[in-house]
Length: 350
Ligand code: TXA
Ligand code: MG
Image 1: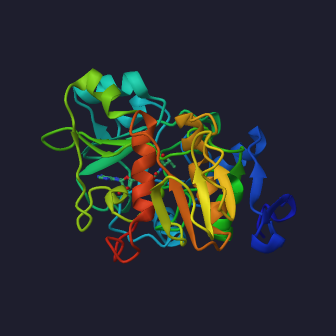
Image 2: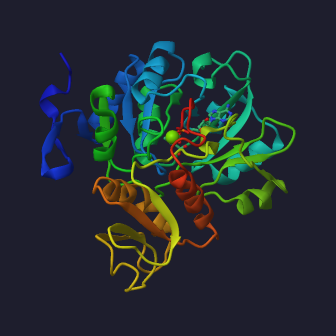
């Protein structure tokens, strides 16, 4: 019997105000985290919050568990997963650290930075996690629930974002349940994630350090520590990180970026205090009334989901400045706005 059959307190608000029980959502109490850790150790899948987005976690050393992650997401197995560990000493069991990696880990871990490093021979992480590459993506999350889960599970946790492949990442437990339903054996709920965008990915496995995905740790902050880095142009046909696929974080409704105002029939995803931009809109959500980029990043995926569910003709998105976190926000918006048949074919998209 499913051990959590009697614990279902979560309900998912579906479109059209229907409510569906999500029996696998549980509050992230110490007891539940302990159970979740045991489940991971048994090879089952647990969705959990991190400071960036929710992840779908499984034992990174268990091929069956990792295969189940790919199946749950509908993600092609050529697309590697990030391994989550409690600290740099654990990371060093799986990856080869040079001086740059050590300095970055010291400065940014725990936190929203994923490092791609050469894989260490003998690491027990299974090949499916790394998609057979000789590199490995690794990160040390700072979220207390993620950290407690890592210690309860007692081993490395492979965890992609807890969404179906090609869709917007989930920033609440309800959104995880909408995406994955019972494909996650358990969903640890701890509110809305604070950062709201996936981790920055820096590739240190090649000849030149390369930013594969912008995030809350900025390219400038990284450069301050290790000097100049390249920013991946991204070849949508041969992505190093599917974050590079042109269409990745994709709602079904068409997005119109850098809009000054909404056209009739559109919804508006606003940014800043302009009271007129939404006057023709069917619905207006504001990423940040005060123009705060951190607030905007934290709201982005949830608001895209809400507007996408409304069945509008389109979603007009006001322009977001290309500074600081605005770079990562614009990156996600551009991918979400790319035409559906462009770059999305045959690839996992996260
Ligand atoms: O914030 C995050 O990073 C979240 C939370 C749950 O930790 N995770 C996440 O995982 O965003 P995912 O699978 O959605 O995105 C991981 C990205 C993918 O684009 C994948 O291709 C890339 O990391 N990646 C993983 N291993 C890689 C490797 N060895 N070389 C290049 N890219 C890699
Ligand atoms: Mg993803």
